[in-house]
Image (cartoon, rainbow, N blue to C red; front, side, top):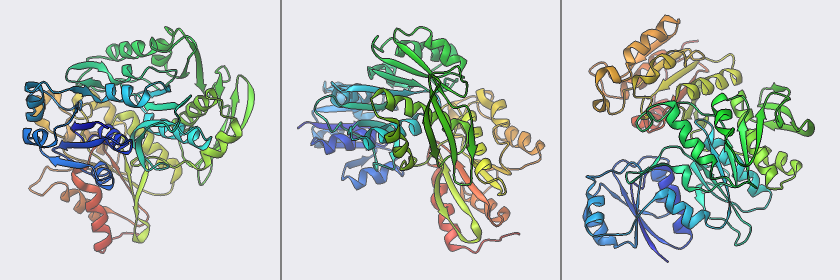
Length: 481
């Protein structure tokens, strides 16, 4: 048994790996300065001791064998400085996953700008449903497992399924995380410009994906979105078999047609022109069909028969904060929580909600929090991302002091563009009111019967979900018909 100390344990992947290692018998402690649900609750449920704030005394008290450094941790962090001064054994989270969890298992890595968490969760569940007992690392809490990470249940011929992120590894290792995961089966869902804090251009991102592809052995397979030109450009350098998925009959994995119903989407799947069978998912939107086909193709390459795959899909539950219904309240009000923060993801999420609920109003609450969405790089793209919403609420830019004014997302300009399209827009934090309580008040002043309220953020939105839930339960809503 080893003892691990996680600096920045509140990160989604960090917390998930910490719990997985704890369940494997290791002693785990850690610290963070901003723990919030669901990861704070997840750590507490598994009795992981967490310190609030970064203090060298925490390391002196716990005396860990290995210190795991999160990629949000940089020089100047008091615990990191102590660990360096004392020559403690430091490791990045991706390196730890490669060494302790992937090990000698066959490695499945799901990558792409969008859809990684859902695709990885579904893939892991299909393997589990087939009895393969996979290990996995998912960038969220997978509902079917109530976990974000676990070790493989097999000592021989096991699989480990990883959500492969192109973000950098640690302050001392600027390579993309997925370069540590040694893929045998790899998926690339899509590639767009993102992570503007570490990548200067789309070409830099494509370079990382090309490096990732060179890790796949010649007897491995690369499964790619056949509609994405950036993906196809990188796949052209592969030394392994490449299989495309999408809606064209030219692709190896093809969906010739699909139908949206009241409860989801159904489609027929072809492989190399041969009918595999019917698939039913409780989701809407083409992006969710593509995520599903990518998972099916991956499971097929692990030898799982299609009938077993189709059966597994029917019992799949989406991960938390992926179109998660956070609450249903009086007067038909529904609160939905979603991780979307990139313009493409926001557009896809709202489009899916519009397909599923064509007659209900959508109040979209967006928090510019990620290192890309807080910048002006996507100013124009954001202006058209809310077309399927009826009312748009824009939260405060997270840590705006990091950027000069011209480099920062202009929320006022975004609201003006949304208003010009005929929608009501509200910019939070502009008046002498508490944030995000001003959003709660705005929603109560404007909500109607059967409205959907959707939260779009990759963070906590300053506790807006909890505030709205409490207010919907306690207050009598001023409902208009």
